[in-house]
Length: 203
Image (cartoon, rainbow, N blue to C red):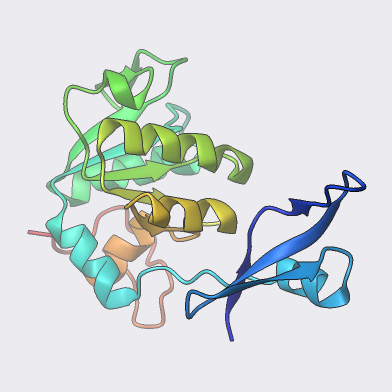
């Protein structure tokens, strides 16, 4: 049975965080001693499950605009490669978000999501896992509907929180790889062909 751990509760008599609230997939919850082996085991496990392949394809097909938070003008950064791929292989309207830059890949760079000229359908995030909660707050504030956290970035509590606030959350998946896999840019086994463009675009 999949579970997720919420914030530890505090014992009123000692002031210590003594219990963990365990949320079950059926919506019920219970408290476990924070120091118990079971609580520690559950805390170390990934229990959140995001959209499946069919749902991710639907997200990509429905979107018309994508914002990349943490975009970089440096070619060695993965966000640069993803931005280049999406420019060349999709019909998305792209926004690059980086407060330290004025221009990325020939387009204006914006200081924050609230500075964008429009609300993006998907917000792709290249930030540390610990930064995801604040990015979710920004995504909700501007009215975007989907946050896509890039491959290698994981914050389970933030994923649950985002969903509770009405967001569609994709996490620890590369939007370039997903788009290419669905549209001919990857081999059947999922290995990158090395091409920066897919053989056909989303639309």
